[in-house]
Length: 491
Image (cartoon, rainbow, N blue to C red; front, side, top):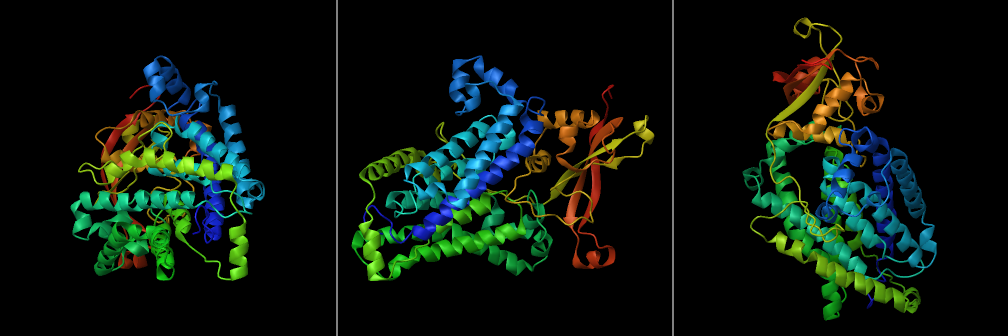
């Protein structure tokens, strides 16, 4: 680092800008495919109803996060247009075209992504209540101030990414230490690979690894999240004390450890873009020094414009001010997980999986075309990501986010079924085409069933011996009927 210019972080800037833009492309694509059947005009939780309720009261309007749809009427067409526009802007950033211009050009592009996606998240209700939504928003805002390809990235913005990564990792580590006993007795990952929301194709193999390995996983996680994040700031210490040498590389080593642990999570699960975003943000600490004197002198000679120094320093001061609640939360006795402290979703608190469930209960939706539900033959609806047929190997979807599948995992953990789930059953009884496209398999091939019901099962990964005999990936046992047979004519 050299004053206001992080001269050794050009590669880090490239990964940050292109990687964050790629994640925005995925996020807008996910919304294009899923928002309308989930939250559109005929969605399970219609966004127009939310906006109409908010408009009734000034207090409610202040509670709503900023969204374009508070100023213009929501329609599914406008939502689709916003998603297509967001994907287009994200695509040109991935290619790197705006970065070839002055720094305000990529700034405008990233701020458009940030504002556009916040407009969606703000009316996304429970389907957009995940921590990685606010993580993407905060990362996109910071990426707006990384500058152009012909200039070094601003030191203050690179350091803000370290602070974001610190909150993300250390916050998750503290949530675990303060959470369930399984994180303290090192047994959490004995269960997690099997009971996580949406397993991936290698989750079963990870689950079947020896117990000593799972304990090592937990220890490695604690080290990566509770110890390593402090070393991200080592390059700043080197600047303050005016030393070179190993200090410069400590941040890179810390980033490498974080990337390695996140890569393990990528190949053993499906956590939307959470792990991918963490990997991208971790590259902010990867320093590739300019070693040739002539090249270093040339880099230093490219001074950042004064207006850009003023803007980035102002962003730094704003971020410090907005981060104060998150800093206090890190060391609070009752630490909040994935909390936003302002309307703009900046300076957030992060964390996940403070407790790990030891048993996997799945709700299976069944339907029948028979008139008499008591003597009926029932067929199962198959979801794209969540476990269903015992012989089906889980697929890799991340960084794409299957929102309906994720919320299906949460249902057995609650005390009552949510309103959106009742509407889902109604849509299945109507054979609603948009809703059926969210599923992997409709046993009635577009025809409306007479009845649907919901049955709970306990799922376990098949042991190696069971798999050799039956080729099954899962074993399951039926628990009870959660929702008795219902029809559009009444139960």
